Length: 292
Image (cartoon, rainbow, N blue to C red):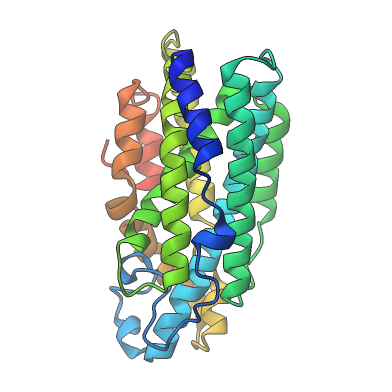
């Protein structure tokens, strides 16, 4: 990316900041008619048990699951900040790239605060990371080079953007959540311009082995983030009997829906720099049901 374009992005960030405190109508309380997550993204919609739920249970299902989504967003943003801090250390402090990264880190931390406030607004109690999630995060932040951490962070951002697009375009979704996703989408649009430049830098000279490794990093990040969305405890909170059996059925249902509704842009992204080959396709098909 040219220095002039980076300077333009810095100027926009400074002159037209989107502040969650004023952009999101936090004072607006949810109504009984509001939903919290588009039904197409919920884990039970499409199963026979979904038709047995009361309207309140359906709304609560979306509320609990969107809390998990928001929680994973904050986690992904935090990992991205680790990458940007590592990358910034390699750059001259007066350079446009360094100064843009600082602006981006500021915005990403505001996003994390916004997601946390949205969880509080929903009276949410997120189910925290499992041991496997924590181990994956620790390995990523402590051991992986900046370019691999970048790829994993981009994967989480792509999922975030997909969920956000569904939610902000659905009029039945609680207005606070729609504005949260809308703000995030606008600011991430500026970040994507910068991200594309980094992507070209990392993949331009990457050979078969490195591209395959990038592909696996993205795959593992998506797989782990996806497993944070559907948890057995959610069905227990809804008062559903035999939560263990429901959880198993819901997990299979959600995996199919995730593959159908959320993987398209991610597949295009990985395919754009040659991340699918005989060494990686089988894993994408096995873990995510991707049609590659």
